[in-house]
Image 1 (tube, helix red, strand yellow):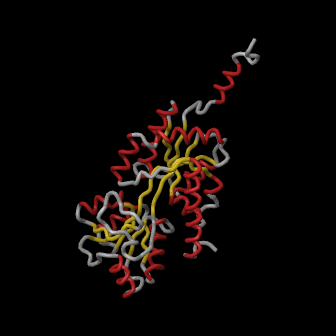
Image 2: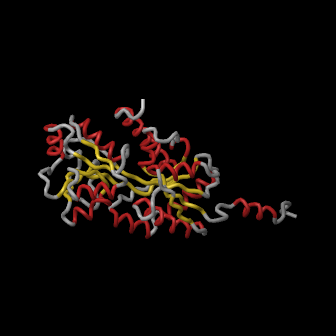
Length: 311
């Protein structure tokens, strides 16, 4: 007998194969938002590759922390994937959670990046970042800028612009980007900071005017809008999304998800969504995706200290 283990060796291999059942992909936000749409596009492609259903589960609340902490409480077996993005890391950095994303989770694929953009009402006299900063200098605290949440990325971008422009704005938080954009369309605030995915429709309709992309690169949807760097203000606020599992998940499972994601993230559903939303399809895999997440988190920690959120 050349196979002393008999057929049991093959059975053992099959028993250890991943995945053996459906996978849950937790989106820590409500259904229908940009994060949810990206997760659903990816899930449909990933499920086809792995041969199981990847089921979306929306667990919103706490600016993404409710769903994040839920996944952290689950088994480290690869059957609960988290949509992990910038605002979650930022909320952890400013002390809204005891979680440390660099040690709690391993990101195995980054799906996209998208810079935040400053818009003003279309009939505003403000046309450039210099105009906005000058108005704030003339009347400190009187120029209002809407953001999607206190302590969120758009809020910290406003703080960063204050530092770079030596001025003071009035920060006006809303429950999500949609409310912040609507407030600017309704002229309840002087400006809003959000992604082009949230603002482009209002710019195209003539309700809003985009004055700056907060990045070194131009935006795909609003390609003619000058960057903050081009206008002399080195303010960078870039949204991003990734998919992650608990950090102590077996490496062979992380490797399997990474390999499957190399095809899934290039799938038609994902590419179509990136085109529609103006996301830069800037994919990273494995260690590179995880190192990006860790690097961004450390940057958020540094900014949070400067802004006084943490010691």
